[in-house]
Image 1 (spheres, helix red, strand yellow):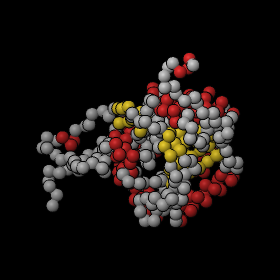
Image 2 (image 1 turned 180 degrees about the vertical axis):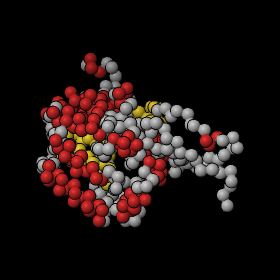
Image 3 (image 1 turned 90 degrees about the vertical axis):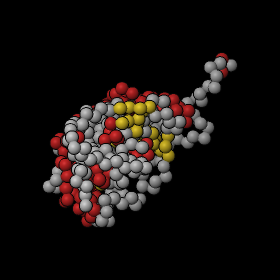
Image 4 (image 1 turned 120 degrees about the horizontal axis):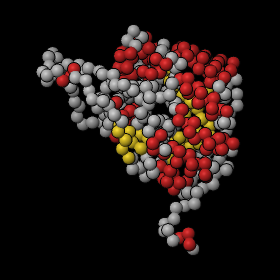
Length: 365
C-alpha cells in the first residue's frame, strides 16, 4: 500500500525549457523521492531555473568513433549539455555520466570548453594525424545560445580555416550566419557543408518541442542565406515523430529546396535510456490525446520497444510505418531534385599547424 504522505511530484512548466522533471542520473548510488511534509511544499512554484555554465577542463578535443552507420569518424563538441532544450535530444543520456540529470540539468547546467581551439591546434599538429572531415557539434549544438558569449565554435572554425581542414555541421540555430565569412571562404575550397535541422513547421509544436531553438521559418531563412553565400547546404528532417510531425516532411523538403538547399536527410525519433520516460512525460503534458497513438507507432517501428539500438536500423526504424516514411522521403527528394549529387569535401589541402613551441625563445633560433 502506498504511503499516504507520498504524493506524485507536480510537474511545472519552466518557461523556455523542454523537460518538466529532473530525475537522478542512472549512475547515482542513491535515489530521492519528493513527499508532502504537511506544509504544501510540493505545491509551491519552483524558483526560476537559470542556466549555469561550468568550465570543462578537457585535455582532448577530437573524439573518434567506428560506428558503421555514421558517415564520419571524428567529431568535436564545444559544449556539454544544450540550452535549446529539445525534449527528444539523443545526447541527454550523456549528462548522466557527469552525475547530472538528463532532464532539466541537461538544458540548464552546461559545460563549455574554452580551450578547445588551442587543444585542436595541438592535435592537428601531431605527426601521426591523418586528415578526414570533422563533424562539429554532433552531440550538442555548436551554435546553442551560450556560443554568443563564449565563441568557442568560432575559434574552432578559425583553426580549421587556417589549416584548410574540412568540417561538416548540423545545427538548428540561426547563429551560424555569424560565421558566414569563414564558412563561405572554406566552401569555395570544398572544405565545408552545413545541414539545418527542421523538425516541424508548426510554431506551437516547435515552441514546446525545441523551446530555445530558432523558429522553423527562421531556420528556412538560414538555409537561404547560407546557400546564397555559396555554402553547400541541406536540411535534416529530424527527428520524424510519428503522428505529431511526420505530416510536415514533404512541405519541409519543398521549402528547403526552394530556399536553395541541395541535400536532405531524416532520422526517425530515437528514445534511448532516459529519453523514453522524458518524452512520454512531455507527450502526456502537452498532447495527452495523441500520446498513446504516438507511442504505439514508435513501438511498431522499434520491434515492440521504445528503442532498438541495432546498427543500420536505429536511425530509420523498421516495419510498415518506418517503410512508409522512407518511401515518402525518397519520392519527395526525387521530385525536388535533392541529393542528386554528393558533396565530397577535399582533404588534400590540409596543412598542419606549426607545433606549439616548448619555449618562447625557440623562434629566435
